[in-house]
Length: 296
Image 1 (cartoon, rainbow, N blue to C red):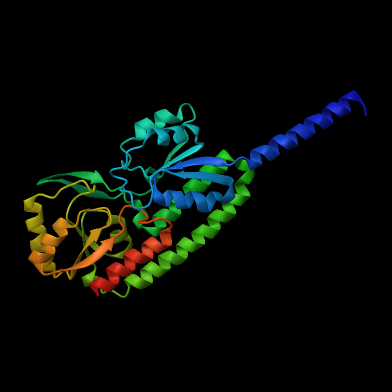
Image 2: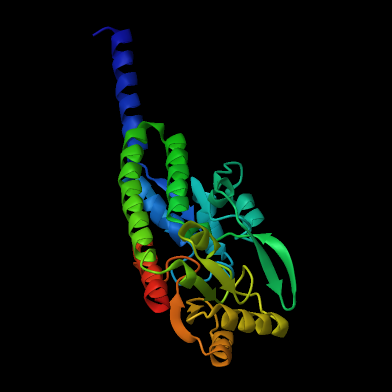
């Protein structure tokens, strides 16, 4: 073997070894949304390693990253955020990523709904960050994550495309189930009273009217005037039941049920997956079944 042929062979072997190492190295993802954690795992499969910073049952409105979270972000290849102003610590995360800057603010690329943010008896217009209560929005988010993973690892495009198609098929089936279940409830009974305004996208998608007690954040506290007006509205509309949320204090709900005669309909999962091991499908089926069967 000539010297040049030997060198060419070595170069090819090294190139193959480098490609194999790159293929084996997982894409490190930091996720600050329980919904996006599932999406990333479904799309990326064995090609990704997902760190779930916001755990099921944790209120994302109150979440504050610890130093350990920041270290994981600094080492991540991709950071997934709900955005639409959900993460008040966004600037800190971007700073932690350094020059890489692979931060995907998923919600910012999705259609937005406006809502009224309540602070006592004062209010102002805001943007609704709870986009995941529309199955179609989760499908849109899935495609965004797919495209970003393909950009980061072009060699795995076929794998990411196939896994995305499989997950989208599951979401399509889930959306059909939700519509079928909601159809059991007459339109004049589709009035949803909850602690805070988290179900706007659900209402728009599936034909409900939302009557929230407070504003966009679980920290928003309704004033006495707002509560009094809601009690009148509930009585006028003949609302059968009101719902609490897994991350909210049910005290005001108890007062409203007492004053209106409406029954307590149970807890809904408002700000993501409610408990460890829960899937997006299970969250939707729990919420929709609770709402429909209670309001019938």
